[in-house]
Length: 60
Image (cartoon, rainbow, N blue to C red; front, side, top):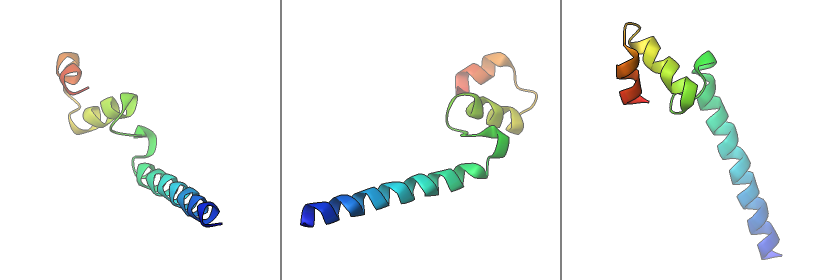
């Protein structure tokens, strides 16, 4: 019984963390996740629109 309760609590926590992460990522709008892939490059371009491809490659 205790194992089932612990598993239920863990799954609830997992679901809440996913929801929290999703809410935090919404503030980036079309840029998506600014820490990964295309979202990161778009975030860099938003901060420094005149940056060269070579300098972007150093950040990404």
